Image (cartoon, rainbow, N blue to C red; front, side):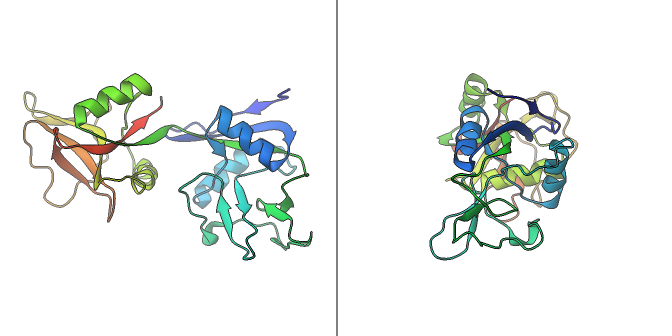
Length: 240
C-alpha cells in the first residue's frame, strides 16, 4: 500500500514524485514506469536541487534511475531510455561508487545493491512526448489533441533545452511545434494561446508567409524554422 506521495516540483515539462514506500530498485522502476514515466533522472545541477527539494525533509536514502549494467566495465546509465549519464553532473556520496559488495552495488548516487535492498524512491513524470511518426502540421496538431493535450509550446530557454533533448531522438530533420503564423492578423502565435515571448529563430527567420508553421531543428543548434504546413515531420506533444 502506498504510504505517501509528495509532488513539490511542478513546471510545464516535468516533475518529480517522492514515493514513501520501500521497494527494491527493480520494483521501484516498474512502479514508476506504470504510474509515471520512469525512475528519476538528473540532467543538470538544477535538477539535482529540485530532486533534493522533492524529498521534503526525508533524510534517508531513496532510489533514483541510475544503474550499472555490470558488463565488466563500471559504466553508469539512466533508467530512462535516450538520456545519457553526464559524469560532470554527478553528486555521488563521498567515497562512492565503492563497489565493495562483490560487484553487486549497481544503483544511485550511493551505490546500493539493487536486487535486495529496499528504499523509498523518486519517480519522474515527463509532460512532453516525442512522436516518431511523420505527419503534416495539421495532422500532428490533431494527433496531439486526440491522444495527449496539444502540440508543444516553448516559453523559456529552460523549456527550449528540455525540448531539444527530445528532438535529438527524432527520425526527421525537424520536429513540429505548436507555433503557427496567421496571415489574417500577421503574427506568430502558440496554439496553446501563449504569447510568443521567448524566441529561438534561425538567422533570417521568420520570413512571414501564409501556410507556414514553426519547426525545430533536430540537430545542430536546434533553431526554429518556418516550414510549409504540408511537410511531414516527427512532432512533440504536451501531455497537459
